[in-house]
Length: 132
Image (tube, rainbow, N blue to C red; front, side, top):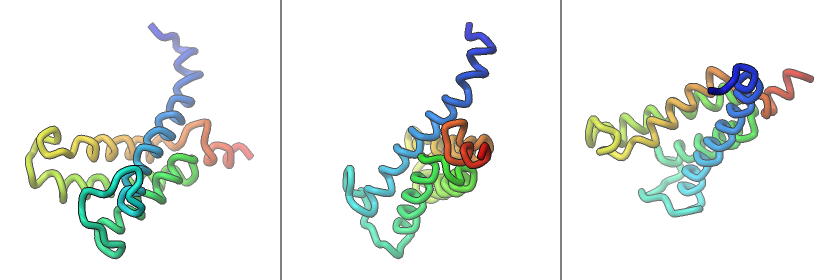
């Protein structure tokens, strides 16, 4: 059993680690749309299309979330983007996320929603700004 003091000490730090890892993973989606890195986008990409907007949101929001700057706002926007992505691209294929390939979109949506509520944790620029 984990002690209360251990949880109290490490919970804010793990929140920051979660934020950083989710931000870095999400960044790959935007980079693949715009730059074909680390893998080319599976769909045809147009900068001024819906995928261009999604890629821009993914790049900007993921960088802000990763560094912990304006975490709540960036995470809220990213959560909304993932909800839209799920219901427009995945849900029409099937009700079940495992079948429609939307399990990552659902996870991102709810993790970003959690970050929008909780903020960036102790290892974030937001926390440093509030201390100073």
